[in-house]
Amino acid sequence: MRKDLVVVGGGPCGCFLAERVARKGFEVLLVEEHAQIGKPVSCAGVVGVAGMRELGLRAEKFALNKLRRGLIFSPSGEVLELDRGRTEALVLDRSAFDRHLAERASEAGAEVELGTRCVEVKGRRNPVVGLAGKREGEVRTRTLAGADGPTSTVARRSGMMGRRRFIRCVQVEVRAEAEADTAEVYLGSSSVGLFGWLVPAGDVVRVGTGTLKGDPGRGLRSLLRLLSPRVRGEPGKLSFGLIPYDPPKRLVGGSVLLVGDAACQVKPLTGGGIYLGLSCALRASEALSLSLERGDPSLLKLYPREVERSFGREFAVGRRVRKLLLALSDEELDALVKCLAEPRLREEILRKADFDHHLTLLDPFFHNLPRLLTSLGPRALTRMALKGMIGPDLREV
Image (cartoon, rainbow, N blue to C red; front, side, top):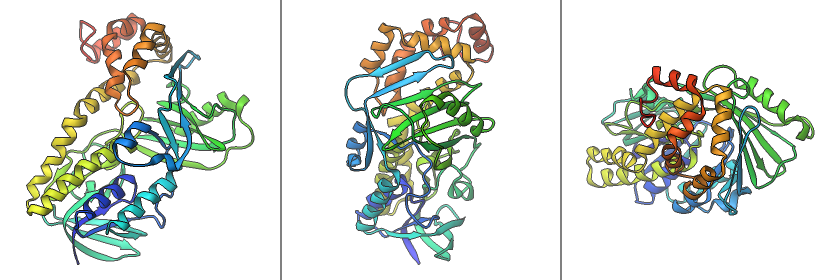
């Protein structure tokens, strides 16, 4: 059997990519290891309204809540409130949203095979994909897309995976008192880990934590203790997930490409990957379609060029700021949040920030960098300078 494109992974990015290429009339096979699209879910499911409209997706149909306000809590309880008086984001029913994208792919002509794993990739110029599960055997394909998540088999088997660390996340659904239009973020390395969140999702809230080191369950227990006066009843469904921390060696190798979590296409500051992954999948679909039309695998290199042009600076700057934030103690995080909450700086953030493009959020950060860094105190500045995180003029991060 020979296909024009095999897509491994039936999450949002894989389904969106398969649909876009299938609509061009190419033979596309989408394989997903789970028996159902959209399960299991290990995601808070928050997406920006503007980003979904930009991609032509009617995500409002799958919204459990609309978010207008965000609260960022420091370890000691300092609060940065962000509210522009309009709906900024949606909390999705991820299972339903993912199934919708899979149905679109199928309607476009893509063949969707569930309960089927990719276990081998032979060659990168003319890939042969080994499958196991409901569908067994090998499939020859002109092109191959790995949309199979942080531990991507395609990335590993094709030699494209570099150093790979993960933010380990755990999330639970629970009934609790919460504002339906407000998402909450909790900071504190000694308590919640890298970060924690509370997101209202219909009749329940999704409470979770993520950490680069150690046990995320410890952070979740700590956050649930903090929220205990608001919790009503016992925690319900528990889920686990990984957010990729390190990008792969490359996005394209021969006729193989990576997209979504497999390509570490997530927001560095929050780990959110739906909008960025879908946006990169759109660019991948354009390069794939052109390559297949002209029979020229070298045209796949247009994909990483477009990703770099659109999001390169956002990835690079976001990762450097994330590294800086990871180096802060709880006391320094308190000072930073308190400084960001000052009226003038808060208004600048609200004026410039874009939910889907964090580079706009970082503009006020860099514009006020000397002041922000100074608020952390001399010990933090000395430590960061010794580690090479900041330059002597406090502007080089």
